[in-house]
Length: 256
Image (cartoon, rainbow, N blue to C red):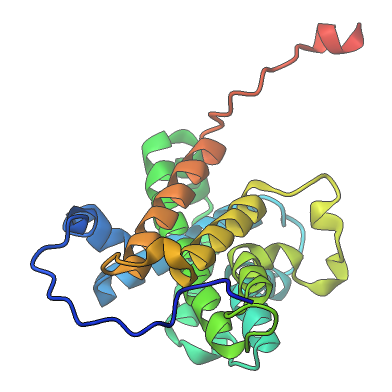
């Protein structure tokens, strides 16, 4: 079915200047896209530490091994499920930096629980960790969506559509479903913000880079990644800072 980029041969065109190059030619894009190993490790630490912040608040009476394994699954849930689905190597086994970051964050939360109070009391510190967390989550969604698109063969359309989108969505929130004995309990009350943003983000990213929408755009993948990260960061800050515009109903009105 003709759905996707055209495969017609075109003449080579010399592009003198990228009209949208300003999107990537700035320090924010350089940081969000993690163009250096130092930035990547910083975002990885922020990602694992913020996961620990959310996890330790729920697990108070459990044993240390239970907490540690739970943190591994929370931090790398999507990186475990998606590679298994596409016959790849799970992220915690393929990248040694993740176990180191997880172990470091776990030790900080376990031995210095006061650090979680700092995040609760300081909006600036929490915003900083949300920024690192969402930047890393965007990178995970992009990498696993692209990896799934390369592994899954096209069927009905000229490129695989739903498979990579599903993998990208799982990549951004897979930890919520691990261990698997949770079943569908995490979505009984509806999709949580990380689940919804991962689904929307993976859909927009995948369709953009694989259809005519990105034709003629230089570095389309990087630019799509940049805006996906900004989307995640903005929604993450709204959720973490409780900036929702939903009207609050007082207890007296609820009784009436």
